[in-house]
Image (cartoon, rainbow, N blue to C red):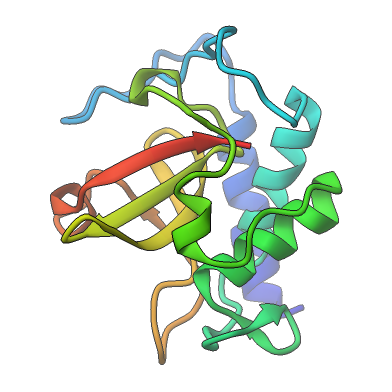
Amino acid sequence: MHPKITLLGLALMLALVGCSSTPSRPDARNWKGSVDANVASRLNLQQANDVTLHAISLVGTPYRYGGNTPQTGFDCSGLIGYVYRTSASVLPPRTVAALVGWGQQVPQQSLRSGDLVVFSQHGVASHAGIYVGEGRFVHAPSTGGDVRLDALDSKYWAKQPVSYRRP
């Protein structure tokens, strides 16, 4: 693994693990991140954390349509499938269209690390990523890009219709 990516992954991991007494930063979408005990999950909290850390460690991996391994690159659903399969022994659907109905719907205020974010265009699921906390998600964005960490409240993503799913 490239040293720059390793340092980025370590820095992001430390940021996520930081002091629990620090208040969350307010922003336009009010990311509270509280866990809703009424939303069922196939993942326990440790598995959800493992999924989160694994997703962050893959930042910088090249995008490849149909890709589903670090060696071949990832598309968005390939990234999700690889991370859930290798980190939590859970096999999600392979397509974004199927991911939109996978697991349980989660209200935005109940998001936790390891949940999915699924974006839609014109009423059709078009892109997905793994929520990693504090309003951020890891995803494989597009041809010519790399797996990256983005904010849900960024100029582009805040305009996209989104739903949240808990496996």
